[in-house]
Length: 317
Image (cartoon, rainbow, N blue to C red):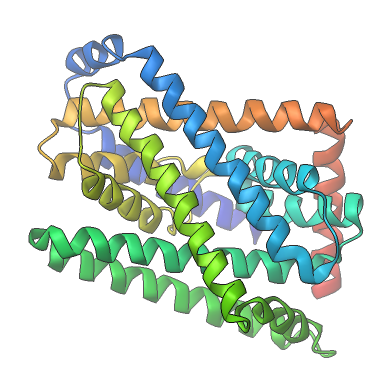
């Protein structure tokens, strides 16, 4: 089954790569790449890294109900998990995060899994807020935005139903429901809920700022509302299952949204490739550094992760 889903994800990525890179001028694209402001590019990457450090702090707050997790481990957990999603199939980086927390901080995978769901929920709420803000100004995109909302809602509903069917009915002891409720308990306290929403808005605004400088490095000065729209469209595209690092869907979202702001196809392709490469490189380099600091070895960790994933599949089967 995993081989089939991986094959499907590769096909999806290939389709979106074709849609992204068809009918563009290679010579013009290379000229945009050569004109890229390296200083701005590095600044954008640094801001992007800062947004992930803040994600690590938020992750520590979310996990507070499950036990004490050090800020260093929480931040490393975020970077290593994202690196896993960049290089491993089936978004195994998410499982890697849970596995590492169990190994390093003795947090049960069920509890951290519930926390991961809550993290996604806060991100989803924040992305919708950014989408509403951008669509309130750019009414020309109202119909398209409604379609994107419906798509996001449909995908989320399908995922929830599939997970519910395959997990809840296989979990006779009800541990999954218990731990999900434990995670949702962070939302019962209005102060905690509002503080996490505010924290999430700060995270996504900083990540949006990184996109502003990414575009500026290629000579395109978008407004902050246009950047919010790019970030919103990108996150909708990333809901589509694809190859590791969201190859194809990432490029398509950047090309698609950039063309809406009258950026040529060739320039949009340059932006998509440059932004994706710099994000990929910066996350992986920081993750490798943190793993070195923590005394972790990538190859050994991945082998242990694969064994843990296999045991999890067998136990749920």
